[in-house]
Structure formats: C-alpha cells, structure tokens
Image 1 (tube, helix red, strand yellow):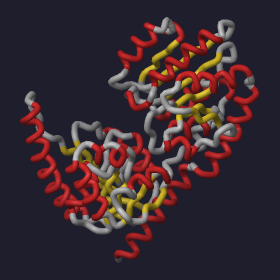
Image 2 (tube, one colour):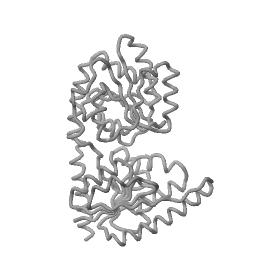
Image 3 (cartoon, one colour):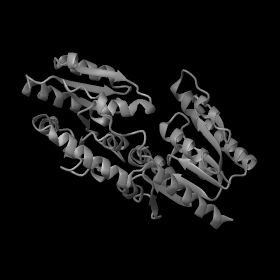
Image 4 (cartoon, helix red, strand yellow):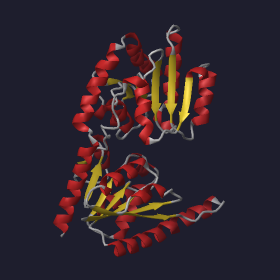
Length: 370
C-alpha cells in the first residue's frame, strides 16, 4: 500500500478525479486543502481522509493581506504535523505556488509537484516575489509533472529539472458519442468553460453574431455552459448584438452530465487567450464532436488542424466564424472530423492509462526512497 499525502484544491474536479481513481487502487490518501471547501464528496471513500484549513478574514483588505501571510505560516505548521502523524510514502502538491509552497516548506521527500497552468503562466508575472517563490517550490521538488509539453516548456523557464508529461485525459466510457441526443432541426455551437475573460467567450459571441447574419435560413443556437465573473457582461454583449434570443447560458454542468452536453453540440468552440492544456476540447473530441479552437499553445498540442477541427488566431471573430461556417456548409465534416478526434483521444488521452502512469511514477519514487 502507498500512503499518499496530497495538497490540492478540495473542490476541484481535477482533485476529485485523481482521488476517485487512486482510491480504487492500493492507496491510503490524506487530502489537505484550503478555504471553505465542501468535503462531502470524499465521504464515500473509506481510504481517504480530508482536512480543510480556512484562513481568517475581515472586511479590511490590509488586514486580510496580513492574515493571509500569517495563515500560510500557520497552515505550513499544520501540514508538517499532519504529515508526521500520517507518515506518508510520498507528498504530492497540485498547483506550483500555493500548495507547492506548503509542500516545499514541509521539508518532506519524496516531494512531487504538479503544475496546473496559471501557477506558471500568470503567477510569476505578478511580482519578483511570486517568481522567487515559484522557483523555490520547484527547486524543492523531487519530480515535477505537467499535463502538456507546452506547459512543461513554460515551467522550464524557472527550473532546469526534467519534467514528466502526465496528460489529464478523459474517461472514454463516459465521454462517447450518443446520436439520440442531437437536435437535427438546428445547428448548435457550444462552449464549456468558466466564464472568465481569459477564455475569449466574448470573441465567440461576436463570431456567432456574424454567423447569424450570414445564415438567415439556418436555425443557429449558441450554448454556453459554465459560471463565472464575466456572466453579466457576456449576457449584456449578446443583448447589444441582438442575438440574446439565440444564446443559451445554461450555467454550471456537473462533470457526469458533460457528455450529454457535448453530444448536443454540432461543433464545440474554445477561443481562449491562454490555455495550458485544454481538457474541455479533449472531452468534446471524445464525444466525436469536432472543435474550433484558438491558437493558444495548449490547444495546438491536442488538436490536429483540419483533421479533428480547426485552429484559428486568437481574438479574431471573423476567423472563428469562417471556421464554424465550414461545418454549416458541409455537415459531413462533423462526422469525419469527429471520428478522427475520437481516435486521437483514444491514443493519447485515455484516463485509465493516465492513472496507470501516475501510479507508476509513485511506485518508482517510493521504491527508490525505501
């Protein structure tokens, strides 16, 4: 049995998927997370223990800043005590800054550190201190993991260590084609993303406006799944463009229901300004839904241009609309590209194989340490 001490976001679907998969194997897991998280999901696992540390807060920003710094010091001491009591074989921190710092400060080895995206793309640009902390955390890791080659290259700006690629794939038994769901009376363009500015959903809405103008005889619908801080602004944009009656903001969708959503799309469109991996595009492709994506690095690694979909320039509604228009003109391409995309996912992003790879990494590191 491997005893794994995991530092990660308790509420994240990524954490839930890793815990769910590893709990079925010969693991005993201690999950340490921060800040008002709902831990009820993990009650179903007998071999998983969860601890949720919450920072104190006030109504004053300066006081909150001080409390946050003190909170991290306090959290690091608690992490050390929990590690000592649990006696793990390995500590694995997901996210290279916040949880990576707690893992690095614990002094425990072997220490695995997974980079997620904004921790290496955005955080070091905030200040010199953020960059120093990131470099420190990476320096303490015995093994660094990345879900994509492009993110590994970005991480190597801050460390010379070898980085292992561990794709975050999809459950191919869950994400698959279901013909009965599709509405053949309309053409549905879809997006599943958090409603944040970085994901370029405003560009998608502008592209959709062009498609509505250029296809008066086609029943077009845009479905946007997700919640986030940009929701009101995006709805206002759709109203200003006169297409709000054709745009359906369907809100948060549980992970288990996502295959049904993707199967309702004719094409899935993701126009992010930055993307470290692009798991949503992989989920769509697994359901044999072709994709139109921006040329953000994470997408260019997983989408084969003109085979599983189209890659278009970022911040370009005209290019996005032109790519989607190809599917409206030639709907046989939906099946053709969808089939190719599914095969691509089966080859590279099978979740079961990804889990086996992670277990193999743990086994090698614990065996070496012992």
